[in-house]
Image (cartoon, rainbow, N blue to C red; front, side, top):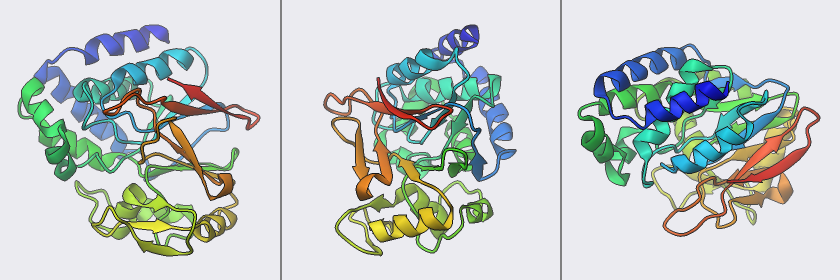
Length: 279
């Protein structure tokens, strides 16, 4: 399997528009076959937070555990801001096509053209590959919104709990769209937990995003018979932060983000034991 990884890294570093167009067509078709809510296996899982074009960090996590039976769950925000955005997303797409059962790629709030135009990915695609932005946008629309591991009791999402979401299975009814116009999709990608509050309230991020308190998390986990939410979406110097008395673990997996970051991922083994893994 390591040959697959090393080949994918080599290919992802090449800016061949025809090959990338073919890759985007293949991965878009593959992602379309996946549900909006992915069911994770009971084995070892590695959850990776925002990487934002830090493909060195992405490679480090992959190389560490690729030769094991680990399933990789990436929590979104592969592009924008970082130095190697095209290479980062192409590496993950190459691996998704070569070993689809090994990678789960969730959608982040930066996987949409409206955000990409403001934070760098749109321009980087133009510079490195020409007119392939629409193809990337089409692939982003197919990325699943969340994942759940009943065996480990874990719910994985980029942002947070959407207001009005009861059972996790409801996520499968969310539409596939270039821009997350429906409230469920938008809030799954944009919402944030906060400790000293109850219910939902407007988020300083704006745009209709919300913050939610521990009571929301407790109710959501109880109704779905889960134990933990793993999410990304926020930067932390030490690469992680716990909310709601440990019921939510927020991961940030870059090694830099305008400043050095001690990026972390979460490893959960078959027995459910959890360990934070550095870049």
